[in-house]
Image 1 (cartoon, rainbow, N blue to C red):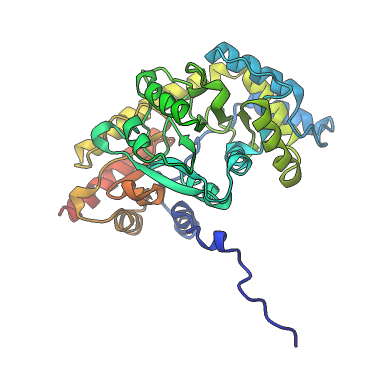
Image 2 (cartoon, rainbow, N blue to C red):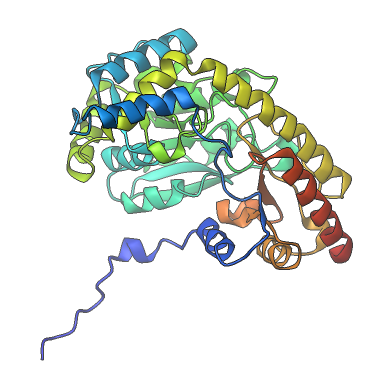
Length: 391
C-alpha cells in the first residue's frame, strides 16, 4: 500500500478563511421565500443591445482565443473611454489588459508586483478578495481602520503610520464595497503624496466608478504624477449589469501590464471572446442604459437608507456602489448573529460586516440592487426583527 500524502494543501492556502459571503449564499439555496439583500450584483439582465452583440458573436463563430492582452478593438475603445472620462492616456497596445473579470485583474496585479513578505496596506473594511489575493501572492496584509464617524474614508495619516521598509503597495477600493463610501479628490490627494514619498504602488479598484450619487468620482490614476505608479482596475459587471460575462481590465505602465499578462497567458489565456465583443458594444452605446440603472439605484438607495435609520439601524449616507452599511449595535448582536437570526426568523439575507474585516464588526451589508417592493418588504421584516432584539 502506498504512502499517504502529508499536508497536501499549501500553507498559504490554509491561512485563507472561507468566504463569509459564500456561507450565506449556500444557506439561501435551501430556503424559500427569502428576500436577498446579500448578492452584490445588479438585479436586471444585461441591456439587450449588449447581449445581442454577444449572441451574434456566438452565431457567427467568434468563439476562438483572442490575443492574451484582449481584442485590440476593445482595448482601443477602452483607451478612448479612459481618455474622455478621466483625461488618461493609455497605449492600447502595451498599457491595457483585458481580464476575466476585475477579480482576476486584482489577482494578477498582486502576483505581478509582490515578493515574499512584501506588505500591502488595505483599508478595513473592504472587498473580501483583497486579503486572500495578497496572501496567495506571498504578501502580508496591513489593515488600516476606517470608521462611520468619517463615513468610512481611509485617511492618509493612518496609512503613513503603517508604512515600513517592507511596504510595497496601497489598495484603494472606492466607491467602496461593503460601505458605499466614496473618496473625493481632496481625500485622495494626500494618499497619493504618501505613495509618491515612499515609492509605493497604488492598486485602485474602481469597478464601481460609474455608480455614484450626487458626487463626482475621482480616478486615482488621474491625480498628478499617479498614472505611472497606479494599477487601475475596472470592469463591466456592475455598471452594465454584465457580472456573468466576466470581462474586466487593468490599466498600468507597460512593464507592469507585461508582467500581469505573463501570468494571465498561463492561467487564463484570454477573456471570453463573445464577452469582449459585448463589452465593446457597452462602451460604444451603453450610456443610456447605465444612466437608467443609476437613476433606479439612487431611488432605492434613498429608500433603504431612510428605512434603516427609521427602524433604529443607524446608517450613514452611502454615495457610491449599491450598498448600505447600517450599524446593528443597538441590537446587542454580533454581525454574524444578526445576519443568521434575521435570515432564519424573517427570511431576509444580509452579509455580516465582519466578513469584510475587523472594522466591519457591528455592521451588516445590505445590497439595494433589488426591486423597490422587495426593499419595502425587507424593511418591514427587519423592523419586526429589530423590535424583538433591541438590547
